[in-house]
Length: 175
Image (cartoon, rainbow, N blue to C red):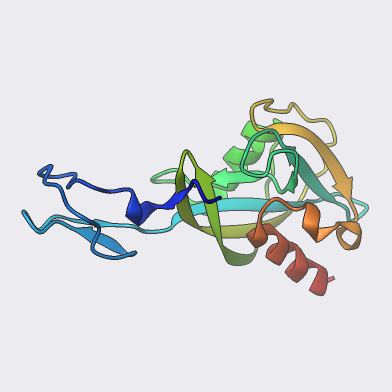
């Protein structure tokens, strides 16, 4: 991940007036010329621990980096104006072609997402939902394959993101 930079190190000119400048801090950019401030807030993402009637969890194999071919939970980024619950439903529909209804909040966890040379800080929100559908229409750009696994049998080293490992560990504790 050495070729990736934190977001605050990628702003070299004021987005408002164009003056050359260095970021003020990890939290925000402040332009010395015009006083404009650009905050480097967390991006918000969601994921669902989808459970079948046997108590198994649905995992996807990621089709692209970061974490290509690693296990992950279905989910993605929250769009502007969207609730976390609506984003979870939309992401599951986009990735798997199925609907989830009743979502139960599990936890949040910090994460980083390296993308196109920038390391984005992320706050991941995790939900649990029962999923009765077993037939999926996979989004090939997002998902290589799916697999149902018993929660205790999952090798945490195979999970793509630390936040998902933390959510799975918490889920296991509550079984």
